[in-house]
Length: 175
Image (cartoon, rainbow, N blue to C red; front, top):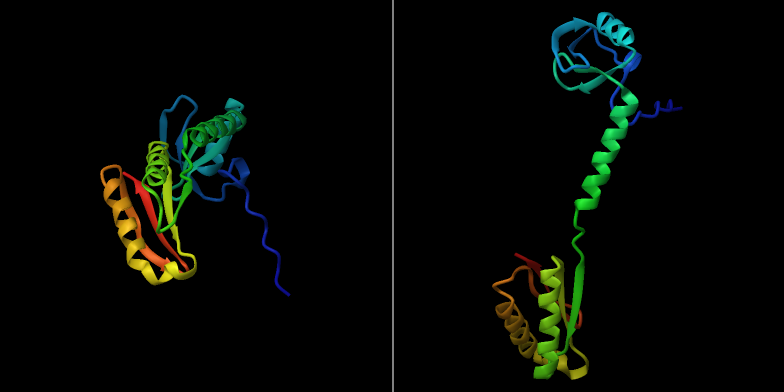
């Protein structure tokens, strides 16, 4: 029988959860008190009516700060939400081509590819061979090379053209 491990608490340890003899103490005004015995640090925090929060647990001795834990958690959540809002998720858009594509159809597809790069997305170019077209893979390779050369100034090739079954695939990423 294996014993069930205690669930790990999210976030920093506070007050009596801190299990060390001495800590590097920073008070609520940001003044460094140096290395202090843990019971003394906890007494100072309780005297101020605040919490003792472990800020840097991996340093020796751990750095603890006297602050309002509820306000600290709220500020951390706000920071995380702001970071999530600013982050851009890179999507992979797919453009499907055929070996016998007409010139105007090709231009329309290339316009879409340029738009995808301007939005910051990756593009997966898929060239599908049907029936006897599979015997003329050189036509498909020339088409992929043309796409690569036309997008060279705005994109870099992440995956060179390669065959996957009956289709040729190439992945381009914006510069």
